[in-house]
Amino acid sequence: MSNAATGDRAILKTVTFEVLRYNPSGGATPHLETYRVPVTKGMTVLDGLTWIKEHKDPTLSWRSSCRMGVCGSCGMFINGLPRLACNNQILNLHSDRIVVKPLPNYDLIRDLVPDLGDLFRKHRTVEPYLIRKDPGEQDRPTGEFFQSRQELFSYLQFAYCIKCGLCLSACPTVATSEDYAGPQALAAGWRYLSDSRDEGDQERKAALYGSHGVYRCHFAGACSQVCPKGVDPALAIQMAKRQAFLQGLGLGKPRKAGGVIPPSEERRPAGEIPQAPPKTVVPGSG
Amino acid sequence: MRESKLWTWHILSAVVIVVLLGAHMGTMHLGGLLERLGVGSGDPVDWARVLHRSRQTGYMATYITLLGAGLFHGLYGLRSLFLELSLPKRAERAVGGVLAVAGIALFIYGSYVAVALVRGSGV
Image (tube, rainbow over all chains, first blue to last red):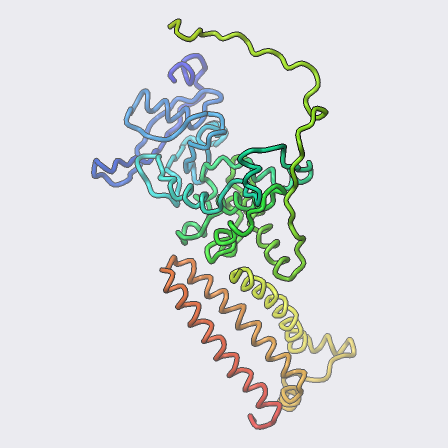
């Protein structure tokens, strides 16, 4: 990172990184360690951590992958807010002191690595996939499930979730109630409940509308505020409540899943599909 | 689903509370304004007037409705607090049961008082 972060670019200033360190095998309690980091234009918090690892302390641990806000791996508690380290530039934080801690509301594995097992366990409880009454069609499709543009947009924003877990770390209810399903799982559940192709209402009822589902949400809205992808889990939870309320009063619209459209030549893309470029590596040549 | 039904009643009881508590606030604390609008009828906390109101069947029904809505709304909220303590399932059910029994007992007692006032035996 020496070149990418500082080598070729002018150092604009030096900031102090205070990073929470914790090594369970070392017997030490979690504590903050301080590093002075030179900052160049465009440098992200993740770049800063990489600089520390390369120049100061190779044992510093965190989780990251794509570096472009897509994989959702590098969620951290940065200057008092849950954020992705890769899409927050140091200069945009407008502070000479950058405090980096692991995400709250999760168990800590080491340094900045939270245990996201709880997030994925809760995510699985809402069965986050299309459930149909015609499973044969899913296994051996004869066509496509019909969905209008309007039906797509009714849930599209909830499909942008990257499962970074920031919403759970911001949620005050998750902080006090470990059984609460949390905004991520509930929004994922609503994403499928509001998908016109889905028929899994009954399968998701216990997780969404059980004693630790949507009704435990206090509507603080912190989940929506911190989501790096613009998903609004608080809205999803309120929509799920509204649907249950209206159905309870017999006012809800009956849901009928979209049918299957057989493949049609007319709907195929017009024109020739360009050929794939030639292989750059011939198998067996290396 | 049970939780959805409870939530629905929670919302409906809130509406009832807002309406009836609004009527209560208007009657008890906006007497002057009501007088000026020509719908007031004297001091609302005058003992004779309180007694007169208490002995009307309509008021009794209102009191009982407000009592039921208030008890349900409040006890449901209390149950929600307990559910957030991540108690074992059995404890959660026990808390729900105790609150339900307490709510029913308080409702019966409060309703008895309202009915007794109408019959004139409570005063």
